[in-house]
Each structure stands twice: as structure tokens, then as C-alpha cells.
Length: 153
Image (cartoon, rainbow, N blue to C red):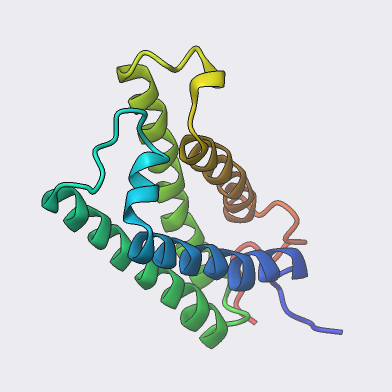
């Protein structure tokens, strides 16, 4: 049995599930740009304009960087709670911004009050970011940490 201060649930979520979704984001933005755009806007223009493709490629790079951090940093410091909290707290900022950006877009399009008109990508962004954000917030707040909030083992 591991004596790690990081509970198994958080270890699995942050070192396996999170990097998997980053890799999925990289693959999606790399190979299916048209589908990404179409899943986020009912008025999408596909193929995307060059500047939109550029922004998607920037996002691809971001997902790749975050996945590399999740895989390498958390494995390099497997018992360092402050390092884990710093990475998860920073990523929580991203989760909140992505959720708020999706909600803002729905408001601007006048579709926020009609969930039946939301597209698959919008649901994924809202539900996925809110769910993983809640798990990240719980970790950062020390919920389920058994008193290991700031300890380095």
C-alpha cells in the first residue's frame, strides 16, 4: 500500500484521465478542425479561416503542453502536494475561463436559455470543464486529502 499523501482518486484523475483528455484535445484539434468548429457554433464556416485555424493550432499546443506537464511533472514529484496543488490550481483557472467563455458565447448568441439548441461541443465544454473543475477545486481545497494539504513526502 502506498504511503503517498496524494489519494489514489486524485492520482488517477490527474495523471491518467487528465492527460488522456489533453491527448484527445490534441488529436481532435490536429485532425478534425472542421468538426471542432462545427461542434461549437451553429453558424460555423468550414473549413475555418486561416486565423481560426491558427487559433486552433495554438490551442493544440496548449493542450500538448498541459498534457506534458501532467504526465512529467506529477510523476517527477509524485508526493509533492504543493507542486500538485500549484498545477491543479492553475489548471482550475483554465477550467473556469473555458466554462465562462462557453456560457458567454451562448449568451451572445441568445441560446443560453435553450439547452436543447446547444451543440455537442458546447455541452462537452460546459459539463466536462465544470466536472473536472469541481474535482480540481476539491483537491486544491484539500477535500479528501486527510490532512496532507501542504505536505511534501
